[in-house]
Length: 427
Image 1 (tube, rainbow, N blue to C red):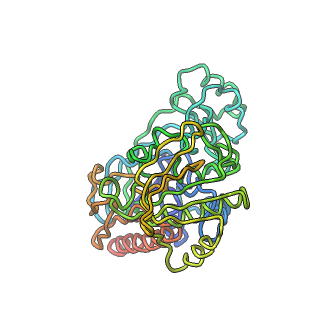
Image 2: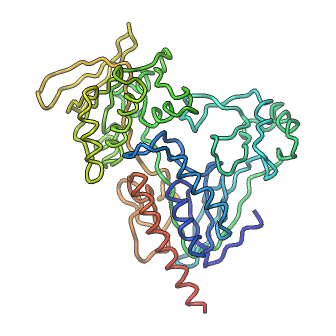
Image 3: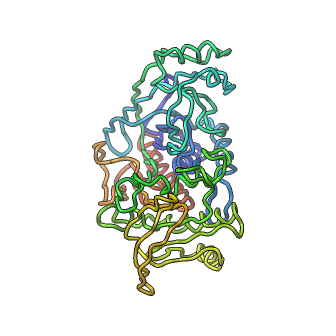
């Protein structure tokens, strides 16, 4: 890390998801020096875990490939993965940032040949697949991971498997002696692009996520649909491995609720409408989707997509806040219980699989970092025109991909203005 040079005319971007990459690239392509930090071993964030975008239903891989190519080609942009901010001091135009960089145990010699992974036997829950499958202790997170370098899980260090990985490498890329590093960066502006995390479905006790394996979350379904995902692109019931063709979607799971997340997470309605098309894509006329909702928030450019999904005779909508989910022990089917608020009819409807449209919350507790930023009641950073720190994408609010990228572009412009002012003052 000794090759990192940062000054008060450098912009620091924290978070390497779609917002962070957008902010970093926009600033770097304007000729500003930018350092992009990411806590994971790879860039891409939550977008890299999606099967498709809405409303065009295109794959995110092409957009990521373009961004990765832009990053590789830009000499003004330095990427540091497995890095987390530990402390920030200073003020607009002159921040001192302490960063902890965790060891990858694989150096730049890595060609991603995969020989280290082949000889390692130990497996761990795969975080990228939301724990739906296992991965080796030496691994490449996903096929398009950038940087294209393997990682050795720190739990492997000191074991025979770690030694096997080192011996298997022909390029002297495995370094089991790597240690955590701490670096201090002097920067003029900071863009927080730390993204979001799914609300913990275990907390929603009436929906039995922790008790019924056939209740999953919307982010887990995204990974199931991916051909490189834990189920090879099939929608399988975790309880018995059978394909699920009758699927219920529960909206506002953890959102708009005084007991959990008070805010609307914005993306959930469109995510469910998109996932209804997955059911039809997989099973044609045999696929059936039922959406249990309070209201559907699909406005502006999304309205046509909503209308198209609603006109599908195999997709039905029940206006209801599901009261609870019970289990049919004979079939393993979850049973949704509640009242249809349009006809005020009680229902107990069995389905083969239930998908919870889980809410979005900030990935970082900004208050715990002791930052001089305004944080609202939902944990998102509020805009402060006097600050040199800016929140991009889902660090500022619950946003879809398009709005997150727009937010990031705006943050890049504001950060550029700050470092330009620094340059002008020193001229």
